[in-house]
Length: 106
Image 1 (cartoon, one colour):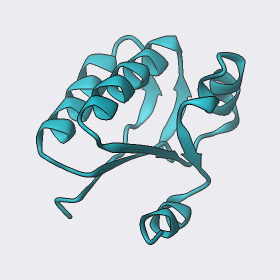
Image 2: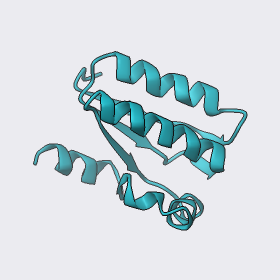
Image 3: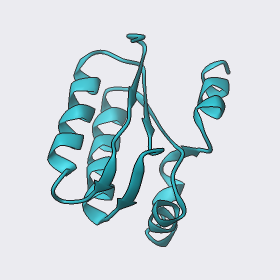
């Protein structure tokens, strides 16, 4: 794994029962000294407000640590959650990993 970029791949339903583990993954990545984190939602079927809350909390920590956060491969339900809460304005949401790789090259 590249020490500059960390990829996190949550799976299944990202709700209150899984947000602690998800938050710990994000915290470990922040503390490892990475420069960018990509959360790939390819394998997430559903996310509720708890999952979104974990991302918002992580975003605050990441900004303080000067680490870039990217999200990719979100499904329509997750996209709607971001849009309804206007959180899509605060997160960098990419279509897929290929687009993420292009972002890194800029």
